Length: 361
Image (cartoon, rainbow, N blue to C red; front, side, top):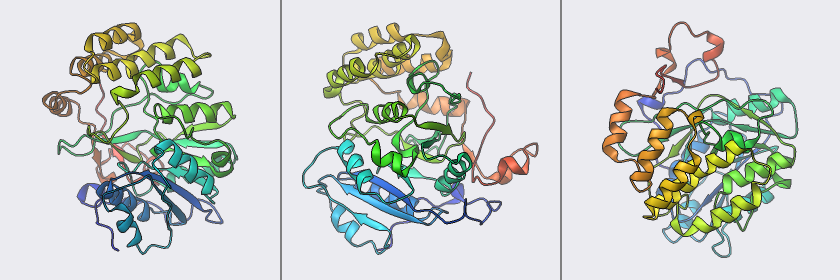
């Protein structure tokens, strides 16, 4: 089967400056783990973005968690020999699927991709170069996302804080201005990823929990400070991120893992996580209480105001305000040819993307 070309178009033209050499000698195998359930069309887009990676030495493990929309038939018709379709015997959730996929992987590195997200063409190439430059077997490479909010205004990015050397993961994810670190951005050293895996029983806060596990195992985190994947931020019924039924599970997870967190990270969990969870379930007053408990000037006035609007809006920013924000502060991709001439060729080389120099207030 020829997968639909869902990731091409004028905005996604590859950079003519990208070199053709492999990131390192030996062309090590990368295992790509994709959990999915009844997302046939979105999965096709994700697979297209993987099979068209500029780094080709891959195995792609799709863990189908009981799809009933023709996903199995679509996977069976894909002719690419790099694909391994591995259905679960029963529905067990995304955490179990990632846990199982990592255990069945054979690569020197393991990368994860949610079936509703997709990678930019040089995602693995750039992360592999970073991993090999570090030369360690405990490395985890992360990157910020670009976002697609479904408004038809194009892909955009928002500025994230830099990951400081030795910074606790809880602080990076929750404290201050907050960073978005999800499974679709991860490249993990293979032996580490097979030894430290997603909690198969956890239904909430799965990505952050996995990062904390890796941190406890001594992983060395490195952030490539450019967006290499697209996060689908549209609100859909098949997403569990803010399922109101999981509020209590998230609170129990927090109590279990936050014993050594800083006060800033604890407040950030209230502000960025619980406030929206409760607002999404219609309990806006409770959401506001967590917003106030987590309020911090370190988050910056723009992000705090945006989060307040989300809480008041029942967990969602109204589309009209999204359009206004996008018009005032357009973080959008543009081809490298449009990058300011002040940027050096070294800064541009190896990447398909640059970001407009707009700044959040």
